[in-house]
Image (cartoon, rainbow, N blue to C red; front, side, top):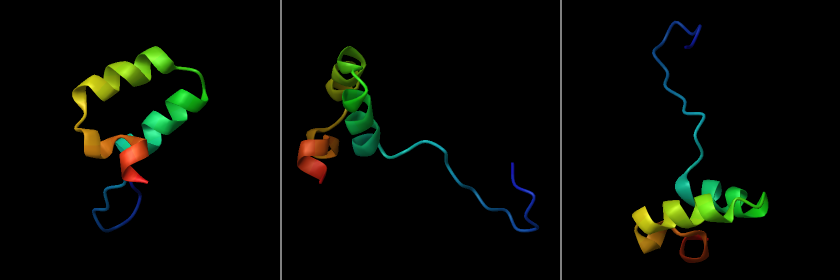
Length: 49
């Protein structure tokens, strides 16, 4: 929700490559692997950055 007078949408969910990198940095390898199975390869961090 925004208190702005203009309809502004902002997401609190990071882009997939950033999210995957953060999961792996925090030790959530199983969850990162599950996400990788359903993402196209161009969104994997090693291919994105």
